[in-house]
Structure formats: C-alpha cells, structure tokens
Amino acid sequence: MTRIPYPSDTDLDDDARAILAALPPLNVLRMFAGAPAALRPLTDLGQAILLHGELDPHLRQIAILTVARATGSEYERAQHEQVSRMVGVSDSAIAAASAGDLDALDSDSRLVARFAAAIARDVAADGALTAEVLELLGRRSATELVVCCAYYCAVARIIATCGVEVEDTLPTAGIDPDSWGLTPARDGTSETKGAPT
Image (cartoon, rainbow, N blue to C red; front, side, top):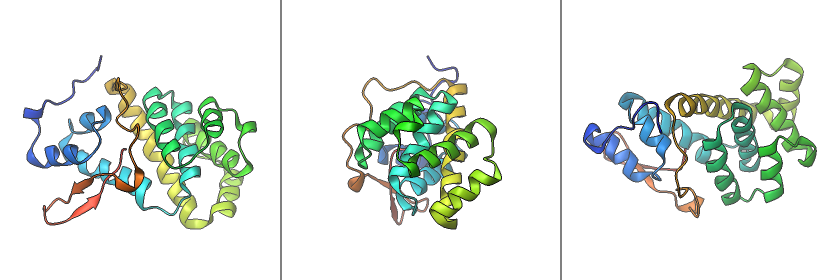
C-alpha cells in the first residue's frame, strides 16, 4: 500500500492526463503526477535518458539495474529487467547486474556497474574510477551516465518514500522500444517520442 496516495483522475489537469495517457501505465508515473509541476520535467528527463542519449543502451541498463540493487528498489529492478531485455541485454548480464555479481559481467559493464554503485551508495565515484569511465566512454557518454545514475537514484527515493507498488502485470513487458508512444508537447502543437521511466 502506498504511503502517499496516487492522484485520482479527477485530481489531474488536462496536461497531466495527456502525459499519462501517452505513456505506459506505470505506478511511478502516476505518483509523479501527484506533483503536477514536476510531472513533465521528470518524464522528459527519463525519456531523454532512455531515448535520446548516445550512451550505449546495454551499459545504460547495467547502470540502472546496479542503481536499483544499491538503493534496494525492487520497482526499478522489475521494470528495468524488462527494458534491458527489450534492448538486447542478455539474461545472464541482467541477472549478474541485478545480483551485484560483477565478475559475471564483461569488463566494460563491470566498470559501469562499479561506477553506478559508487554514485548510488556514496553520492560520488572517486577520481580514479571517474577517470576510467571517462577513458572508456568519452566526455558526452560519461556525463550521460552520471545523469542516468543520478536520475534513477532520485526516482528510487521517490518510489521508496511514497510506497510506489510494483504493478501486478508489468506495463513494460512486451513494449517495442522502437514504437513507444508519443508524449504531447506542452503547447499541444507537436509531439515527442515517449518511453517508460
């Protein structure tokens, strides 16, 4: 049971209803809608991370699963094991990242997992580890990785504090990442591609 109630449909304004209608029916998105001014920025950032970055999607998903493990977020783990399969991460790599079994990961994934775990546990990775990630990924993808880890750390805290429940049927199961829905733009005149958060 949630600690903070989800907003009802009658609590939502037209913009929030349009955003939620265009995205998978995730409980976390419904909880975001309880803070209407934050709904669009939170979902826009999630979509930017999942759809518009240059960071390798396999490494991104290893990082998210690592954050889920480090923060104890069963919700993020469940959703992002599904997303990881959608983008082609192997079941063995998903299991290893979810269990924190770094030795079972390839060297690039292992480095990313160490980096993500440090951010989730300690707020910042140390200089040596950050330098290794920068050498592997370059400036842009390394920065995207930091943003990704920070976002999912924040989302994990929202989930835990508000008591967001894992859906009985995962809305992310079976979604084709190339055909995720469209989120209406604020002015209603254009649309941007949407994705689970």
